[in-house]
Length: 96
Image 1 (cartoon, rainbow, N blue to C red):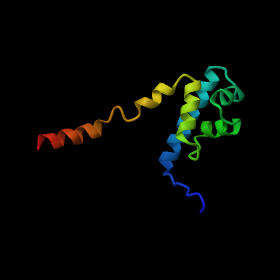
Image 2 (tube, one colour):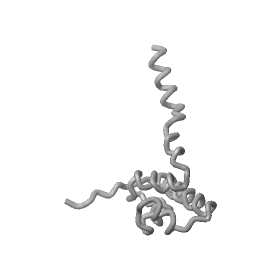
Image 3 (tube, rainbow, N blue to C red):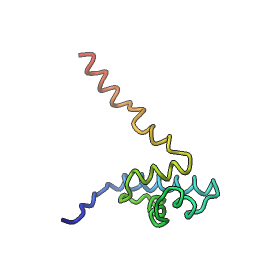
Image 4 (cartoon, rainbow, N blue to C red):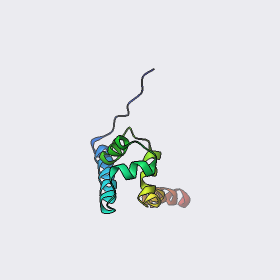
């Protein structure tokens, strides 16, 4: 059976591209080459290029490895931490 490709909305594609661009800028600010980061992350250089482009086919674990090399892995823990809508919905249920 063939691999199923997930279709992303244009806004979702832009989000991934922005994340990839942010990762690339973090690498450049640290004056690290793609070879250095990919070697330290244990991934192929071509995979790092995909990460920096925001390729949806790259596993989130790979993004985490790259962020770890850059000292930014802690930022992944903050996803969903400020769930304002979820808290409002929870509070609305509690008030019933």
